[in-house]
Image 1 (spheres, helix red, strand yellow):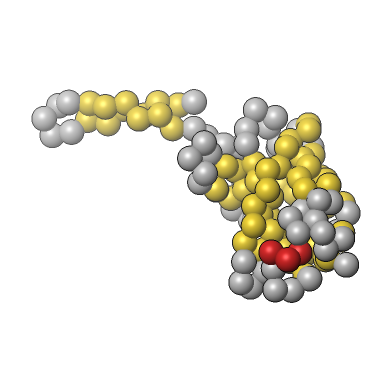
Image 2: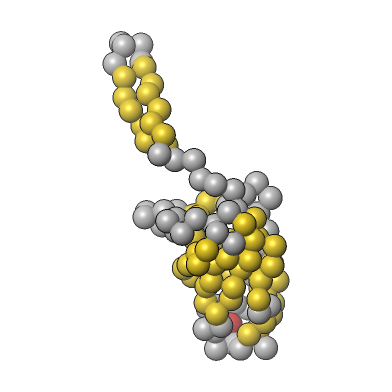
Amino acid sequence: LATTTTASADSASASVPFSYLPLVSVSSMLPASGPIAGGTSVTLTGAGFDTSLSYACVFSDSTMTVSTDAIPTSSTSATCSTPPASSFQTNSVTLSLKYTTSTGLAYPVSDNEPSLPFLYR
């Protein structure tokens, strides 16, 4: 955690907490398909996961986005569960990984955020 101090024209200063988050790369996902009922445990493999941070798997199609908790199990992998296919209008969705905060905000894990295909069958 870094602290940034800013000074205003009246010489008062304030400390603002600021955190640098590590870049995460996701290179693969297994399995890439699962039942329409959801609940499939998906393992994301890559690098840079931090077990002390919070992540979300974001499943989306052209009309809907659903997030589930992603649990980092090591510096090279994380797992999450798929939502039911009834959440979407198609059986083919994309999965991306985001950082999450205690306020529910989500942030990309890298500048080149991966988007992986997942197929409900």
